[in-house]
Image (cartoon, rainbow, N blue to C red; front, side, top):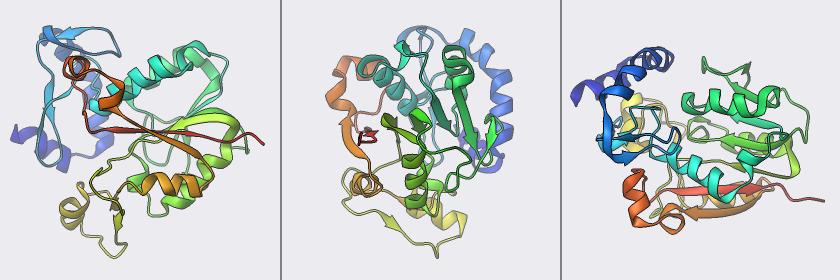
Length: 257
C-alpha cells in the first residue's frame, strides 16, 4: 500500500482528517463481514486496513471508525476497567481529540467535555499544552494520547496536565513506547524530518520513549500504573479487536491531599 504511506507523509494532517470523514461511510459498508470487530461501534468487518508512517502494520485501521490499535485498546480499557462511561457528570479534558471519540464523548458528557489542541481542526479550544488556559483542579478525567512525543518540553506539558486535573482524578497518557528501552532517547538538535523519522519513528516526533516515561509522569506528581495490553485481554480478544499486544496503557491519578 505505497499510496497510504505517501499520503501520510505528504498530505497535511488537517486535510487527511477532513477527507477521511467523507470516505469513512463508504469504507464502513464495503468492508463489513466477519473476522474483526471494532469495539467502538460494535460492528464486524472482514478485514481491517494496513496503516503506518514507515512499515505498514496489517489490520491496523478500522474502516468503520478509523481507529488504530491504541484507540481500540483505550476504548476497551475505559469501558471495562474504569467508570468513565457510567459517569456523565464528570468534567473531561481531551487533548488532541481523536475523531472516532470526539462526537461519542460529546454526546455522553455534553458541555462537560472539553477538547483542546494547538493545531487540530477538531479541538474546541486552541491551546498550548505547556500553558493550558484552564483553572487548576478543573477536570475529573484528562485524556492525552500520542501527543507528548511531539512536545519538546514534555515535562512542562505533564506538569500542566497535573495542574488542571482534580485531586482524585485520573488520566490516560498513551505514547509510542519501546518496552525494550529503559531510557528515553531525545536530542533537540535533531530537526531534520527524515532524520526524526529514522530515529524517532515519525517525522514530527522529537523523542522515542523508554520505560522511564512512567518515572517522568511520577516526577510530575502523578501516581502511575502501567497496564500491558497482553495482561488485560485474552489472545482471542487481541486478535478479534486487532490490538497491539505490546501496547502499555499508562493510567495516572492525581493523589488526594
